[in-house]
Amino acid sequence: MTDVLEIREEVREALVAGKPVVALESTVIAHGLPRPQNVETARAMEAAVRESGVVPATIGILAGRIIVGLNGGEIERLATAMDVVKASRADLAAVVASRRTGATTVAGTIAVAAMVGIRVFATGGIGGVHRGGESSMDVSADLTELGRTQVAVICAGAKAILDLPRTLEVLETLGVPVVGFGTTEFPAFYCRESGLTLLHHVAIPQEAAQIMKAQWGMRFVQTGGILFVNPPPAESALPRHEVEAMMEKALATAAEQGIKGKSATPFLLSEVARLSEGRTLKANIDLLISNAHLAGKLSAAHCALK
Image (tube, rainbow, N blue to C red; front, side, top):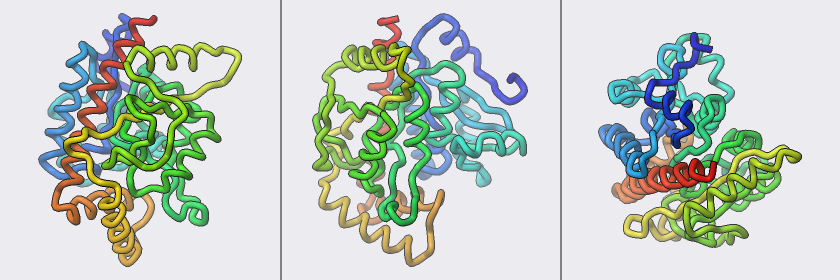
């Protein structure tokens, strides 16, 4: 697959040696955050992973080649280019075949990470069942990818624009364990609380690593991924009622303008950032870095078990 896939030297050497590696997505760079915060945050996430002695592997597609371990210049390119495809799993082949440039979503990044043997992936929040999804059938591919791919995803729950109870129901149906890290409640992205209680929770990375070992060690059962949810840092998290009020306004604006599909999430996040006068943007950046830091610790703990 060398014609379509390139694993950069530092990442390749770590994987061959059995050392810990954490995958990072690129959609947050190209579509999720404004400039210049997108590049700054991408660098900060890689630095947070390295704090645990772990190799970060930011994944993206450049001129039809899937790159595992983007360098600084390539991250800048994704951050500034105007024609970057938002590449989920379903888009990978088309983007590669047409030699386009793409930023991998959660689902796309999980798929590539599993392809090369990376077991841990850090992101902000996963996609899920959209509000009104019971009639629109707008359900993120992130959920099905988690259900079939053996990668541990560390996030701050699902994005606040979603129907969180239905998202958890679908994860349960797909057999995806949802485990709270230092919490017994499902976080709601910008908020530390959602009112949704979790059955499983851990306090330290070593406990999380044991769940990974048990999940993927059951050879007689077909298992997929694991979702570890990490509440956003308390100093930048927002009250739930404030976020809900802003979200309702943003959803109404999106409906008025006919914005839906892949364009909905970046629009809604941008609109809520505007309504909050930047507070949600700060929370988003802080939780991304926090999740990357935890992912580094978890990857190191899982490697130590092996």
